[in-house]
Amino acid sequence: MKGVMRVAVREERGAWKVEVATLEGEVRRYRYESEAQARYFAAVFALGPRVLPPVRRVKGRRAA
Image (cartoon, rainbow, N blue to C red; front, side, top):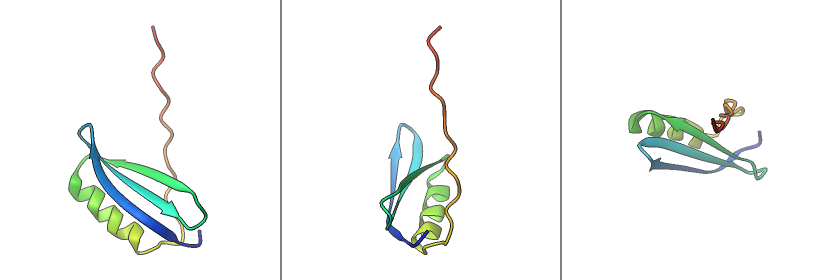
């Protein structure tokens, strides 16, 4: 990864989300249980780590 362009924190449906946009145009979204966790990791991402953690894919529910 060459750098972080933008980091955004927001609350959606009771969960806190951090969105990280890289200079390469990739956008990664992470979900946290608390505002403190989200803000902590947003600050870490804003420092521009060389490697971002993987995003865990969540499969949608199947209709019964």
